Image (cartoon, rainbow, N blue to C red; front, side, top):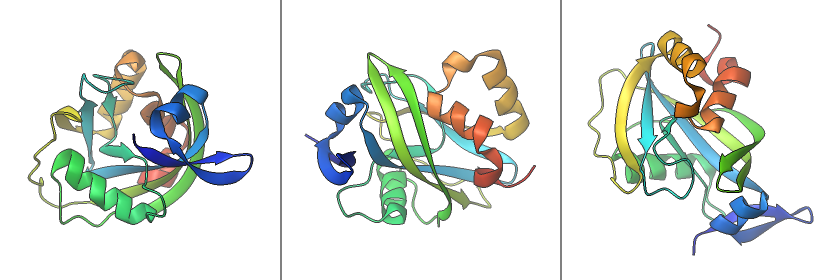
Length: 172
């Protein structure tokens, strides 16, 4: 059982991750965008994920452990999900969203969003239990893809790019 920090009756409490999503509880999360020039590293979620399997998402998304600082969580999960080390995620903003993610589950997250810029394509070693594919894509092309086929992308990636793009990636 994976416990994540969620708010119950106004207090931060350890809650089972699946329960938080089934009940739609407001909970802490971390998201990371890795950028190389004008391209963003995306991951396609593994088919075994309990929600949004096979959909394209930003580089990395997760929930911090209890009392784990958000930046440490971002660094940890980049390594666990993608085998990506040696990058320095920079905090960009905290945001909150609520979205249905299928199977009767709801993501209601308070997210610390980070951006890591890299010069050269990093060596990746994705965990197949987490990630089935990765790719680099320019922002204009990504926005076109999302406009043409939004169902191929996670709700949170669509929300991030529709409502918070400048705060995460900088003004266009």
